[in-house]
Image 1 (cartoon, rainbow, N blue to C red):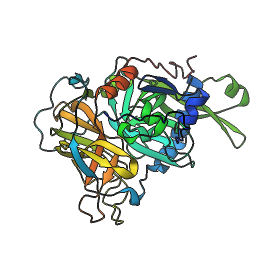
Image 2 (image 1 turned 90 degrees about the vertical axis):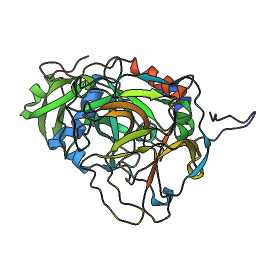
Image 3 (image 1 turned 135 degrees about the horizontal axis):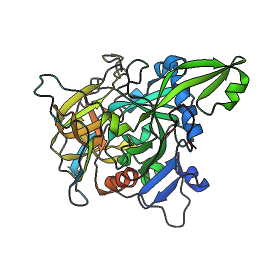
Image 4 (image 1 turned 90 degrees about the horizontal axis):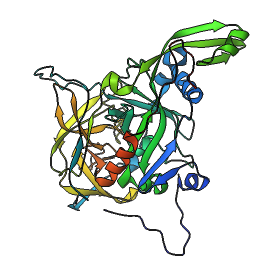
Length: 387
């Protein structure tokens, strides 16, 4: 496994989150870094109301995370990847019975979008999935869909997960990020060989409308609220329950042999490098194939040990899961990768290949740290904030 070494006696120049680590915001336990997102229920409610105010206007305004077309190049295959331990799996939760045979691919309920505000203030989204955890509160996505690698900021702002998102609607609620877990090498050095993240989320929150109130009622109300143009509004909300209880959670697998078939899911939206735009980003798409048996390198991103999959999707697919042993009937499998980069292998300015970090024992350490962390509720039965 590639390790990043510090030069003896010399200064280290690292981008992104190194400064955050020095200020004490980020914390690391061995290979695992964890950073707070919405620290308390008041912050979490504010984040949720930011996205769902005005009938989800901010959600509809968001655009996919955008790759520079110059970054879409041909990746290089080299020697095979060596696992760092025994294969392991965590079983999924969700559908207990198969829905029977189907000619079309059944999209998992766990799939959705993560929304955030980037360092330039733009509303963005990536793909993601609910993944099994002890408290049924965990989301799997790409590291660059959690941390801002394009600016000196750390965590992307106002981070939420919306499973089953469709045109401003959140059918199972909106889930605000509480704590982000990544590999130390991505957190500190933006090492794309570790471009994965696991985020614990609060219970979902659903809004049932907006009510205008007077100043006194506004001050007394402890739930999500917003003052605008001299008027006072409270957002009528309710607890939507735990993420995994509502949509289930995919399993997790590590140190698996390459060359096995996987089914990848996500929301492609951006145009190909040649300007052709075949996807809208509105509905999830899937690819099926076998992962490369050789490691894949992208020198311009300092990638040395990715795995690859033939798949003609475009950005917006970032962070979407690669599911091993996917059951079309139960809509469940095992997350064994996440879409990290896009490549053009035949040089025709069309993306035809995607890559993912190889999930090994160090990935499992990050996942295991995240899966045991409780998050809690945002609102009570009457719309009040939990303290």
